[in-house]
Length: 89
Image (cartoon, rainbow, N blue to C red):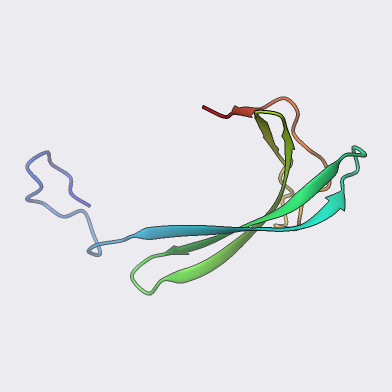
């Protein structure tokens, strides 16, 4: 990362990259009573590609996609966040 628009002054430890991949797993019944799918994201980041798996659930209704309400301890959510929706374009 650079601190100036000309990219001549680095701000620190060199190049840092992030890569994400995901997998859609089995069907579960959420605490909301709807059938959801496991949705896991693998995040690889940093100079040594540290790995972090983010556990989630998804619910698809027509052209709408809903994610789970995150837990503070990175366990799989049990409720869907119906307040935030992604629309298929």
